[in-house]
Length: 239
Image 1 (cartoon, helix red, strand yellow):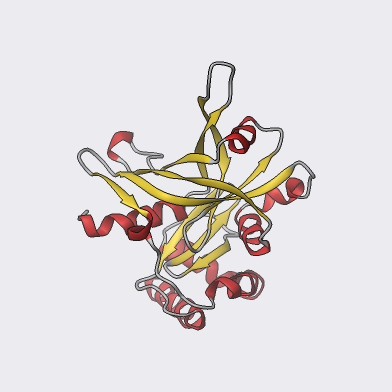
Image 2: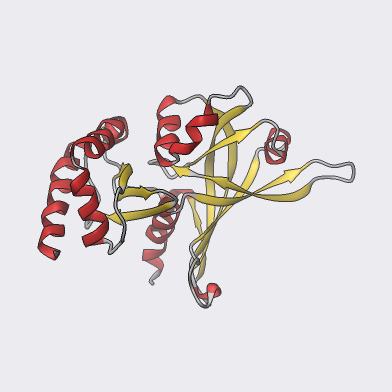
């Protein structure tokens, strides 16, 4: 991996995972203490992590006192030598959000969360990323700031995402299955699309998530259909 590849590696890792370790500063009588907990995450088009947190949780109390947080995205699962695998620490500030599109993106990524997302003590938070720290193996370590991490933009895609995902799941579930089985080599049935961004699509089957990257980033939301059709052709050719 070259230095130029590292920002893309960070984006792929954050988008490819659906959970992270959240570290916050828990207030105490002797000062704030580092507090780490497991949270479910959806990552927005601009790479901002979206969280759904209960007011009763210790990490939420910490965020209300100090909005600075850290999220560890661990991509080392299944490796015989975990320290050779990639992980990214995100530094940012967490703030409550009422943005409906952000809520929809999270709940599509985590459909089971819909059962408690409407509870009065649960609220959505968006983490504004300030910088990240990538460790992708021994000696492959680098700080990457927000500007360098910026994702390619595809105007119109974020607003069209819900319609695209719904259409694919309801009318083209066979295409999604081809993406999973032929392009990603994944087993099992009933894979569903949970998101699309300029650099790829996100899939889920039960508790398993996967990401299929595009060969080239989308330049506009209107390109999504053409690329998704091309991926079906590619999957059928692979079959």
